[in-house]
Length: 318
Image (cartoon, rainbow, N blue to C red; front, top):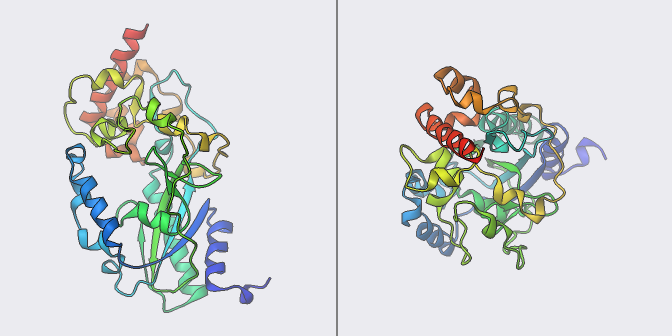
């Protein structure tokens, strides 16, 4: 098959896979979010459990219609990059969520999307315009992931790519090109499984499908500022930054293939992290652990708070 015989969609998907080494690609038409989807989103984020996530209520116009971000938008290209690590921390060590093992995923995936846009403008359509979004622009991301046919939302609230699992970072490229679109996934394939619900250490996942963000250990160790409510520190166990429990127990992750993305490989500072280091958690250690990584989302004072809780839990367990 020659380069000239490929459709614009085929060219884009092949470049994303072969040159950018992205794990999966989906495409959806850039249209307004249906009213019923928008109402459900608004009802979710205005509850007390989301009180600390004020950014979810900003830029509603763009979340409701991606054409507010790019007026000439015709398509949304959704890409997924695996972060399931080939090398992990020892289970008994202070734990960091897998996605924060390597370089800041925003920068890694954004760079790939910028390269994809440059390819489109040079090899597909020189008049094409686009906007790169990687967890920074106010898109209704989960909706577009499902609309692209790439993944569906599981009971864990994680996006599940069929046969591949949940350990993925997603990025979005809003473009002015009409493309060929996949069939949207409008259902879940979790069946009667409730392993994530039963295993969630904070009780954030409810049997009725409700997600209580203020009980999620990822939220509490990363997004929550200042002191925690009573009882949180003890539930942390040895989780210093984030929590992967709902993903670890998910059957869809039983056969995860480790990624080969060099920028996501575990950094030595994380691989060698010890409780002795946490006992003297200095600004210098904070710098070493967080430089160039997603852990910078957590300020020094808050990561120190996490470290003190993890160290206390470790001491109690001895």
